[in-house]
Image (cartoon, rainbow, N blue to C red):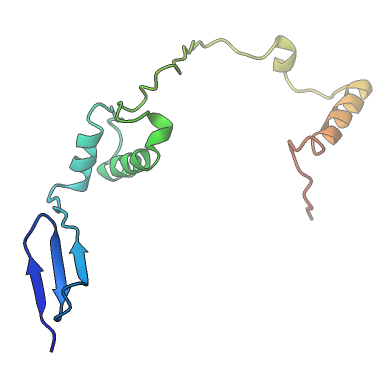
Length: 135
């Protein structure tokens, strides 16, 4: 018959039977009784989340941020505070296309259709589009 002895020391060890040389070490973790969402919100307390997100969506988003934290922050810095990678975005409401591309659709001339066909045939070679079979 074997007995189990637990020794209280700096680390917890268990010896099974009479063989004292084979000690099994236990890592004891404190289990948090805190809500998973609250725990993540504390971790990302400086992160501002959209007010239209449900609790389930917030939890999912924060789990994704925790999993991919190196992509959004360096070390223990807050998310989005990656030094040396600051960019300035200018947002406007002007159309970005030149006037020629904003023309209303109408049948193209024969020369234009040939050029369009030529460019469309080049797109699969550049891996922008692929040919598919259809009925």
